[in-house]
Amino acid sequence: MSKPHYDREHHVKKATGIGDPQCFKGEAGEARFKVGDRVRIKDLPDLFYTRTQTYTRGAEATVHEVVYESPPAEDESWDNTENVEWFYSLVFSMKELWPNYPDAFSSDTVETEIPEHYLEAC
Amino acid sequence: MSDEKEHLHPPAAMVDEVSEFEVLEIAVRELAIEKGLFTQEDHNQWTDYMHTLGPAPAARLVAKAWLDPEYKKLCVEDGVKASLDVNIDWVNTMPTKFGTPSDYCNLRVMEDTPTLKHVVVCTLCSCYPRPILGQSPEWYRTPNYRRRIVRWPRQVLAEFGLQLPEDVEIRVVDSNQKSRMIVLPVRPEGTEGWTEDQLAEIVTRDCLIGVAVPKPGVTNNAKRPVRKAINPYKH
Image 1 (cartoon, one colour):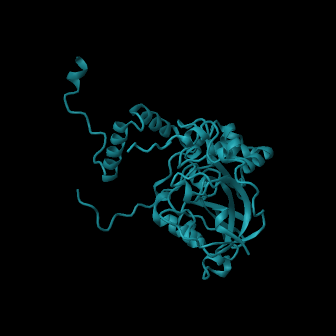
Image 2 (tube, rainbow over the protein chains, first blue to last red):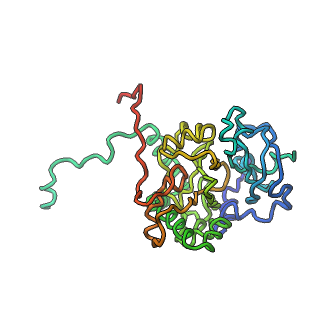
Image 3 (cartoon, rainbow over the protein chains, first blue to last red):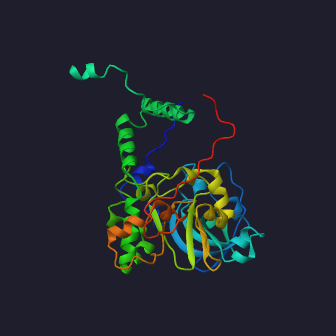
């Protein structure tokens, strides 16, 4: 049996001199959400790796900025760069994440970035 | 020859003790070199690069942004492009020329206003804009800071000596994907007519993470309390 060949340098070849995530620019197509949209974070199952925090799951947020295109970390951690998608910077109200957060500071927020496949309109 | 006679005592050890993690790092590094994944020269180049980094370019960026509204706009729109003016090329100064899995090339400059205060954390690990800010402080990497700042930001900021009124929105920025963030604080009162050098001096690392605000006369990070371990490890 011949030894399998893995191209361990495909990312280096693609990103050198351009940068990551810049090297994925233009690969995600049209963004599904725009600034100001309300979205909910889906509680998707993740095998082994995710960068969507548990505290954001099921919570609603507002799209603050459409930031860049990239494969999601869940795929990229397994060297799969096929599914490039848009990333959104979302703003959550603290009250939404932690229901007993003090009312006096109800304007406080958390901002974090989530890839598109975790989001649904609400 | 004469030099040798003057130094009869053995040279002092570089470090008093080596932690288990350092032993692990050395073992993995040596295996990787043996396997040909990278060379000792590559490793030297990276360590040299890492040691040149510090918060000075980010402080300079903030000072420039305070003085030049056009540049401030550019910082907020495209942090990577704005970094070029303070001699940080996110793509090309790193030895890899494309960023690394821990330092991707997307800098976001989070602009504070009188009613909005940003503070940066990485709850999942300890992502930090190292090319422009250097190595993260020890407390930034601790689970203590990472867990509590998203849940009780006001209490944690108070521990850093920063108490903000109710009408100021605190926005905790959780750096969880490929963006790295620095905070562009509000220019403090009492700095009218200052030069860029003077302004850059008061923008400390803590101000750039967001756990402090710049004040005229304050050019150092506040000292963090060191609590002794309850069950210290006996060597």
